[in-house]
Length: 114
Length: 111
Image 1 (cartoon, rainbow over the protein chains, first blue to last red):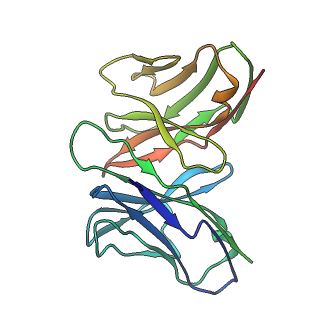
Image 2: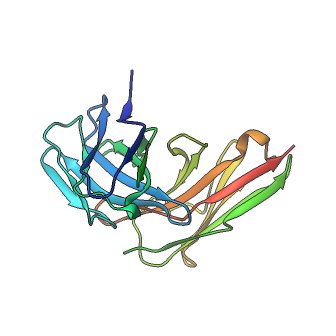
């Protein structure tokens, strides 16, 4: 039972390059989320998706693009990476409805933009 | 955009002591207030959560106290252990089923 996985775990890229971070979950959770974690800012929501083909912006969406063609995958693309996008990125998922709003987080991707 | 203010930024507690972390939110939030725990190199994981229809929830050594009128809630860790050393995040549920997180508290429990 793999749960939720992210790849790559570490990535170094140059300013201006496009980079895609992958997120895959095996639970068939409806909701998926992308956060970035920076010291002093906690976790900030970039984009989220309530279901396949439904995505919406979070608090800090500028410079990022997402898609969700399949329920289990939610890739995050930095179209033209900037140094300010150096961060640790976490993907999360949760079920829709029910009594629990618990989000399950992946292990994170540490991205460095040089 | 919901604002969540978490304090302190860092905390050092002796083994066996009580760790207290506080959070305050500004706007009317939905009915879910969780605390997440994160160990170095790992993703956050749900520790405990509360709904506003109760003022306190306890799970083992971890207790959430909730004050709806003051828009504040806190995490108490009783008998703190070195294994509790981690970063703790409070969060509030916002419209659209989104969580807004506090900035985090780095807890170190000295043995």
